Image (tube, one colour):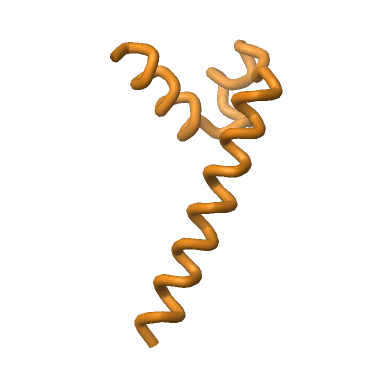
Length: 52
């Protein structure tokens, strides 16, 4: 359970924050974060366009 919460914290941690700079981001987590944020942005855009 702690790994999931740590992963969620990692996903929501900005790259340029102190925490992110201390710990080098591995490529897999970086890729997952990119996919997550692109997907979130797309979902938000679709949601907003659907409401209009």
